[in-house]
Image (cartoon, rainbow, N blue to C red; front, side, top):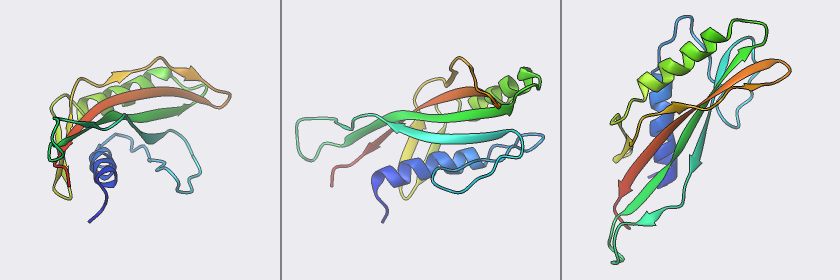
Length: 139
């Protein structure tokens, strides 16, 4: 059985992989070789501290964090396309979306949001933040 964090991040990644964009935008997964040939997405889990939901050793644990999906768009192209891609991610991960992996349920606990864009030498970069939460029984 995979670790809790692995299951949470896998559930979020599975959901991202189900996103249908037209035209398709490839995903650069963490720690895998990737050479961009145009626009792409780059996800990163940003976990927060795990908290206990009670005072007992048997109380469930509360896993929270942000699943950040960065939209990278080539410079000198209309930035509206990058914003539209970010909006599609936000709609795909709307508040209340439930994902299950390895028996662990993960919810989008609030509305996702765009952070301000970043301009890099070769890329227009729009971060999208998806707040997630999972309650997992103590083992």
